[in-house]
Image (cartoon, rainbow, N blue to C red; front, top):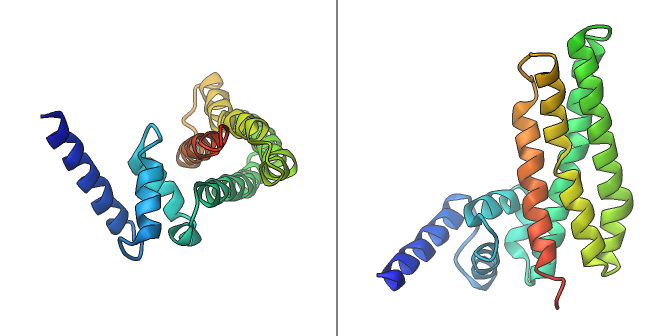
Length: 180
């Protein structure tokens, strides 16, 4: 029974990889699936890596972790821009104050990712890079908490969730490199 369940799970993951637009089930796609199966949520891992089409051509776990880190960096940068634009229109209001908290959280996250995590990763400091990435995962939560504090629905819940998920996957993939 366990082997049947596992086989079905593997088939579903491979089918998910294909449905996300990965080119073909070849050695590179097999690496994607095998690597993502090592994370806590293989389908989320595949979805995050699909954000960077180059990840379909990765040949090592290092390449996949690097792609996921870049996705996290790009997400933080994008979220800074979105929140900055939203905050301009509501300064001086409770929503403006909450968005300023969000903006600060994302600026800090973007800086941690670009200034510290990327160079650390590229230099082989996987423990430091992973810890920074997992720390930036909390930017979305701080933003959501700011809106809960004023009893308002956050207008950026979706991008907060993306940040949490993408940093989580990047952190997990970087973590795979620690003992190599």
